[in-house]
Length: 141
Image 1 (cartoon, one colour):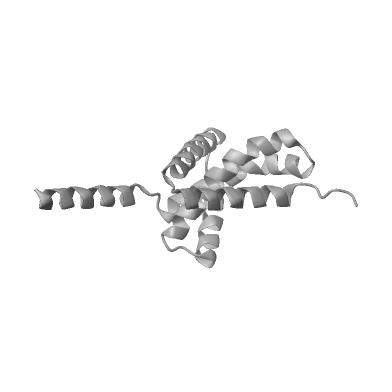
Image 2 (cartoon, one colour; image 1 turned 90 degrees about the vertical axis):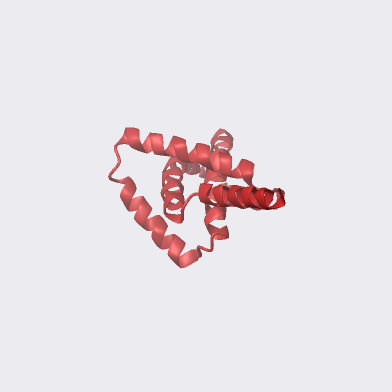
């Protein structure tokens, strides 16, 4: 009985690991979500608070992918290269395909956040908050 429980637990852990997005898929999603976020980021830079509220879930999903590949061992130079390649690949998509990819990636990023532990969620939330704060216009002196 104990051996069966250990085997079932091992298979469950293996399935959970296999369910994580690959670095290439994560790069595709980060690139797609970045395109979705860019017009909102422009509005945030102009002081539009409504755009900020719309940007938060997109940035959160994107950072969830970034955190996942970081946990998988991918680091800056290779991650940047993968992102550049993914951005080039997005140019081959039709507008409808791009929207479909963005919607799927945002939903997947939301799911990654739900699966993240408390510390991982805090790290992602802080990264999103810092990114948005850097976008906001600086108050006049």
